[in-house]
Length: 410
Image (cartoon, rainbow, N blue to C red; front, side, top):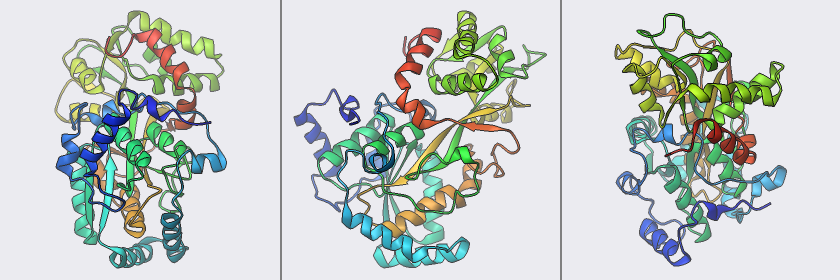
């Protein structure tokens, strides 16, 4: 069944959409010059770059219907046999290679095809630019960056596809939007060993890999809370509680967890309903941490672990450890565009982000997908959001959570 792509761009007429695409892409045919980081930032009409990963964690307003097998791989987009053949040649050339041997071969292939890769992402500039700089320094390659908030990112990719314009080589956004791109047929099959050692729940798709996590964890004000919660049930039953109003994906995954523990869906949802009746609603995870540190409430039901740790490091009266398990994580994904023009460089760059950049990601304050890397989840039990299920059932969970905490922006 076709994904309603124009749910994303419903406010754009055909004429204005074409103007937007020409302005963004210079009206060039396939292989035109990708936008610069400054152009990407100029297109940012949503949240500030520093907060975009938080606000984008569960995707844009676009929704998609279920697609499996060849439908998931092909979606509604038109396959690009030339691009796929070139990518298949790269896969064949590095088949069976791992580690430094694989990197050296990919680097050799990348140098032969050209030294640039076009990267479209919702990753904030403050974090994307150091990662890209390290990649360029290590490999000698060049990354042309287009960075935008979630809605602009999706609009651009869908409009470029409709205009038969090849802009992106590698794309990266929250997992929910990667599912939409997958269903639209905009992602090429991904064949890489770099995520083979990750837990099974991290393997979300054959078309994209997880490169970092937004991990949900309760946090509390240490001046106000002497006995912090130790379970998710205790968290939802806490007095002086706050709930973030866009956390429908976390809500879905936690309801599923409670069902695995023996509750019915109705009983699990009732826990949230009771919590919502007394909870302080907050729009934005960074704002939630700020208000928590200021003592506006005692317990925040689901902060981002990396944001809470930043407040801990700054000496604020905030704590999140010992963490409540299982931790619920929303994945950020990365994949190769179906119209890739630099397949070797794209695979080299993708594998760097999923593997080699993990320590740097931790240094930048993100939660790396490698649990043992700096800032990772360590030995904590982690459940990764089922992005396909949330995409398929999004209306149900968004409506149910809105009924509990109120509408976003309300």
